[in-house]
Length: 438
Image (cartoon, rainbow, N blue to C red; front, side, top):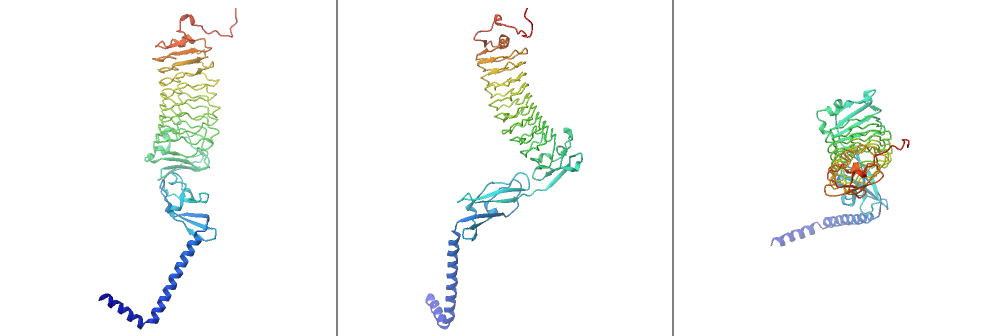
């Protein structure tokens, strides 16, 4: 009965207002038709191929914050000239997080359906200055070291830096220096000495490119225990001394090739216990001294030595995963303790004629075996094969006049000379060829 009553009501209303109802019916019908036609037309036109895209970032970011596709408004221009706003699942971002340093991150946005169609957008990073120090030389105001709340210590300004005693470096004396996590330099600063500048700042995880003017980096990043990659010093054409530069940086795994100008690399990677491969020395033509360069690098599995090195004492001492001796250059003189404690060492290689001292060279190499060519006449050889070859055998060959003396330093009596157990009769003392024969 209720339904019948409602129908009768609308029928009566329509009869009394027929013209008005017809008018509204036509109006809304036309409006609906126009909407449908518009939607169909728009959809059809948007199917026109995209030729370009552009984007804007919709927010500012904190250091290290993650990007989301919806953070960007991406507009496409189609072949027919129309534009459309793309959905977040129709494009990709080239990076997932903001840069750990600086005030901006460049993001490349690419269409999923056509990756060749891209655009770049600059995402702003928020940072605030915490404290700054003037360290220019000779005018202190010319260079500023600024510490930001993002953890970045940034060096800006123009010219040279002051040189400090280690105990007087200002940011290392700052009460909140454990917050320093990254180091960056502007292109206009020109430091020459960075000795000890960041040593002991354990939280550092990122270092920007080292200025090309730097000449000395002694202990610069020593004991930066969370640093996993060495700084880019490839442009430092005048860098000569990297002594202890990364000593104690126990998380270092990646390295940048040593510049051709470097002369001294003593203790550079000492106690870098995560390092597996030695630094690239293919261009290190000036390198002369590598004393204890990889001392106690217990994960190191390969060894190398630059062509012109003369002093390699203790260079690979206690590198317990090293198995093979590298090829030496013609100028090598001192290799005392070079492989002392390398318990996995198997192949002793060739010791060239230039070598003058081999004390404790293979001390503690318990499993050294096979043939070793000894061409040197080193008169300092105490313990050269001490505690060596406990369960293995080594045969010494080569042009040396001291093969017997070297062999008998082995307290396990497992080092032979030309295939024979050494005897006193095999001893041939070195004679200076410059002496006149009588």
